Every structure is written in C-alpha cells, then in structure tokens.
Length: 145
Image (tube, rainbow, N blue to C red; front, side, top):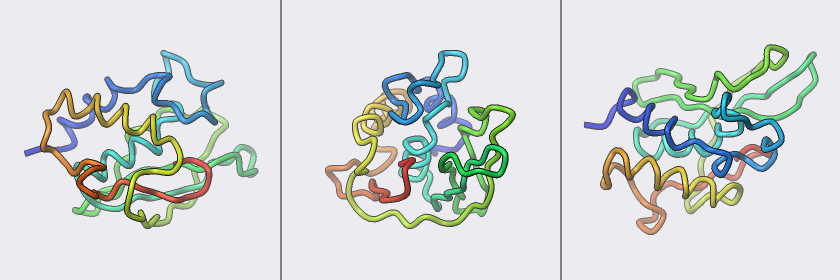
C-alpha cells in the first residue's frame, strides 16, 4: 500500500527546474529543489493519497507575496512536502480547504504531468487516477497552481 514515506522520496527525486512553477523560476536552485513545487506536489499527493488541498498565503513583512499549497490527508494530518522552500523572511499564514474541480490543472499542467510521470515511474503505475481516467486532476486557484 502506498503511504507518505514511500511517496515523499519519489516526489523529492522528481523535482527539478522543469517542474517548478514559472513564477518561482528565478529563485529555483538545485540546493533548494522544493522552491516552486508546492502546487504540483500537493496535486500529486492528493491524487495518490486522497484528502484535501489546503491553500495559505505567503507573506513577507505582513505583505502578501504569493500562495502556498499543501495537503490534509484523510486521517486529518496536514502534510507539507515543500515547507522547506521558504526563505527566513517568508511566512505562510492561514490555510483553507481548496476545492479541486475535475480535469487537468489549468496552470503548470506540463510541470504537473512531468512530475507525476517521474513519481509514477518510481512507485509504479496503478497508484492513482490518470488525467485520461478523469481523475481529480484540476485546481483552479489563485496564482500558485
């Protein structure tokens, strides 16, 4: 059975500049591979483990600079595989459930599909629905996903 401890290293190994949200590309570095990966990562975790998407606001000196996504698993546990991406001056506040409409993502679709392919090649196919199966693969949200 797939669990977070099996999924985490597969996702982390799949991150790259080519899976980064274009908004975060100027700040992506190999020594901080989680930068710009929150949206696609949260979608894939939800695809494979279920639960809810959570969206919060990223602030610097109390000014909004972006959005951040993570997961609430079916057991109620909040999981943020990309929490380490933030600079010390960046703070994530809030956190509300984000409903995920059906279909593929409108933003970062190529990044999502590439990371999903990499993850599934590590953990094996059949771990979750594919876009062709009509799985829950779309989030229409503010800027980050």
